Amino acid sequence: MKVYKQIYSFIVFIGFFAIVPNQNVFSQSQTISMREAVDRALTTHPEMKIQEFAIENAIGMHKNASLVPNPVFSYYREDLGLNGKIHGESILSAEFPLKFLWTRSASITEAEESISEAEFIRTDKMRQITFAVQKAYLDYHYANLSLDAWQNAAAIVQKALDITNDRLAEGDVAGYDQHRIALEYLMYAQAEDKSRMELENRQFRLAFLIGLSKKDPNIETVDDFPRQLTVTTVENIISQAMENRPDLKAAKAQLRVKQASFNIAKKNVYPDIILNAGYKKQVDNTKGSIIQLTVGIPIFNRNQGIIQSANAQLEQQQPKIEYMEKQISLEIEQAYNRYIHIRNIIDQFSLNTYQVPERVLEIAQTSYSEGEMTLIELLDAVRAFNEVTQMRLELFFKYQLSMFELENVSASSVTSF
Image (cartoon, rainbow, N blue to C red; front, side, top):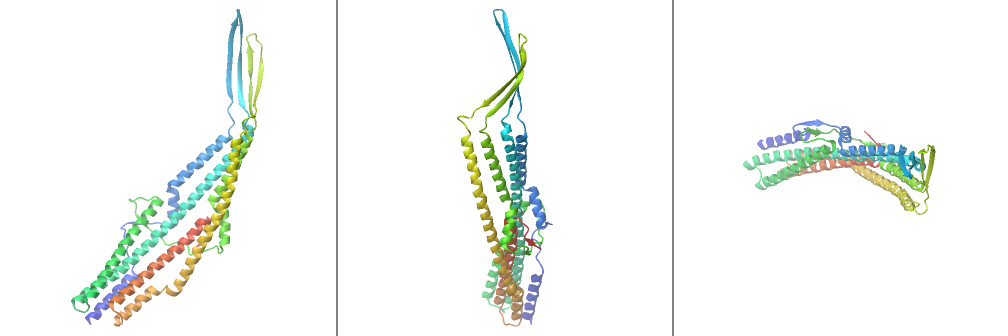
């Protein structure tokens, strides 16, 4: 009867720890959803500031390209004397370069496309930061669940060890069983400690990305992750990516920048023309307006090297874009295949083993209470329970990460909740 009561107490203890979630290892916490974490990162991440300054730089270059060159004013005077006669003149003139007329339009186009390129690069940085935060958030969320599972398993084995120590004192079990359970508990305690370290490291990573310091409260996650794709074919996802990927848009904007640079290089072959107009007055009161037109003839330097270089850069950009499009298609196909593979595993897992953890413990507890299973076999059941729980957490982590990865590589919303 006494042994039966010990077994009954052990089963009740297992049931309690199986249904009650473990307390958070941190004393203070703040609840942050994934959307809030992403918004914080996009607000505080240094890369966003860097890209804002890059856009400001491009806007400044655009303003400069739109300006008209300044005129150059000059005043010339000479007072000469010969044999008592005074000779001399004074000239007031303004010089105005006209070559900007050939290059101004192309320069403005180049500057406008540079602004577009900088804006697309900023959007691409936002895409990259968003995925980094989503991955870090998932890492931290499932590390927390994993730690809970290890703590529950360790608590069950701890109780088994306590009961075994009592039964050993009464001579109901052998010393070998007591040593076996003690080693089992040591294994779970070490696994729990390792899981706690992983949780802390992943929290530090997430906190770093969203701009939190060690003085801020710890993070409590929210399970508001997507459950399925809204776009069913890889062809549709690739089509959306070709329209939406900001790095591809930036590459195409850079193509237009290089086209404008090539046009500028060709127009720089045109002669340098300088218009000079002024007013001249001599000492004998002869006076009047003067006009001078200076033309530089491109006989030797016809800008051949700059034109060749600009053309090479222009021709180089198109293969880069084509390669990028192929790479994007490959990334999407690989990400989609990973999603399908993991979803199939989860479907099979859910169909065949979703109830296995609870069922394993139920069978083990019943068998043990009826004397058909030893205490060591019960601990094996606890190990199976924990292993399947950890496997399930890893599968759901990979499944949800695969959907975020598809959104990242397509730069499109392809999931639903």
